[in-house]
Image (cartoon, rainbow, N blue to C red; front, side, top):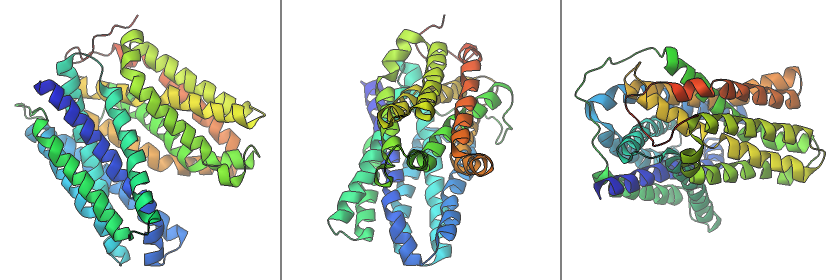
Length: 386
């Protein structure tokens, strides 16, 4: 029963993190208008969110072995609930930048800590659970953005909407916290370690996975519209299909993993995503091109959960530091992806930039055997790879 409660609490943590992160997105236009800034300044301001996350992750990785993930999840959840309303309340650029840094740091902290908790729950359950946990993050994202959008649509003020969202995050965090497992380590590892060997490989593959997702978020609508496949008003349908397919893939991913094993899951997943890109870029009709987004989402859905699981269970580095390095690399991919695609699109074309994304996914297929065969501290899931 304690393990079941811990699994349920971990799902709540993932949902709360996704909910809190997504609450900010509908509030961005109000922040821009309130601060009276242009798009360039807003872009620089939003970088503070990612910067705060990337800075916090290695710190949390070092602290996790000493305190365990349980107190970090609580502190980060409280941080999200405090800084979300401040993003709407503050009227000075410097103040909003500081709040975004703190909000991003809270997101980065809860991201690393809840994944460490997920690995501990999965290890004790001896069966795949990670994909399902990550699906709850995506569902929380839908719920958070939808919640704030409904509030704003009903003429609730941005501040009141942000406070309501913050209360939801706080209540969920406090509800889940007592049931988390203690994963505090008696060993005292290094405070900082440079990723190397197998961890560096996982970080590189995570960078690619998140880069693809970030590029689709920012550039997929423009690709569809510039290719004259859909009208401008419907440009966002591609990313919507990708997100729904990824969530569905993660909800079923744990069961599929028990059948396929990690190697074939990585191999078939990356090849499916590559096939989706080929369909998207070569299809002459909109329905076929949009189907490409579905295949990309289904194929990419379970790559990151496997990479995170392997990072936490490898033996070359302390698990907290390794997971922080892999997660940080993923966030760096989200931040760098849109800019890299922009550079390639400017030099060549947007289609070539998307072909580059497909080419990068081949590295996940090529290293699928290396990732799945790496030694771990102990068996995590009851699956074998042929």
